[in-house]
Length: 431
Picture (spheres, rainbow, N blue to C red):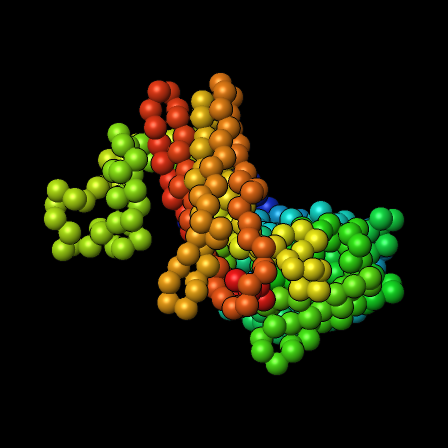
């Protein structure tokens, strides 16, 4: 027997291999008796050391991928009839190939198979696969009868379908301003009348009365702070319209919002670091901003990352934004930002010192000349959000806003600091 001469792949026994060899010989004799050359004519095929037969269009797809030498590896079942009574499937070590008369034969594996299974495989709203996986710039897709599943390492696998997919296509798919989907389709609205998908840089909402429209940037931030579709705004009713200066206005069911559509990504959170004094901490974080870790810095001034003593908290920045129920068309308007500290375990004190700055010609000024100080103390402090950092737009010059928050925590008797800066932001707010 072949199993006496060749090493078996891991997980396969001699008994299985011998049965496969016998099945292979029987299949070849059967085909030769009908005047057909084995393994070429339509029909079935055995792939030693697996005894399971792979047949028809599924066999053709399997062979086109490289058969047992492909990512699917060896078959683990005979061909099976699906619950609908029409489609077929065969399972392999790394996933199945599904076939239907309408869609042909396609493998579905890994994250795509898991997401498809979450919605009931071919019996669910996604239906049968229409394509193999397709490689994209930074990700992959697989098209199904009911929707397309998109996947990246960072976002995972999410289906996008119907009118939301059509709108996403109009924005440029994953290469457009929205990027890849980060959620499945979600029911929304007071009575679940709407649908939405989240994307890397925005959302698309659909309702029967408004259709599907994307919301991005400043406008998304204003809308989210107000309560999305359940707010007085309602659903988005069109795409944002440029007024000619890069400032967009978007209509909603019950009003409008204005702002920039392209918003810089908020910087990542900063871990709290232990220092003996505030001055040492500020010098360290200023050095990070100015690149003090460069080789020209004196050895005595460098701090090795391996030597840092980190606390259990992170200081998270926040976009500078219009405050809720504020902004153009809503009176004078107020802008601000809300940095937060979040801790994995309780600390005894959290303090934020926050400045909101504006640029007046060539100089930066602190709004109202005030440094806001907020704190949370006690044996179980785990969270602090600064809410009182704001500026009323009552001046004459439109300008840039910027900010800085210095956070301090006390944990196990020692003090830790972190410093964050929200990105500079130009708003239609005059100082």
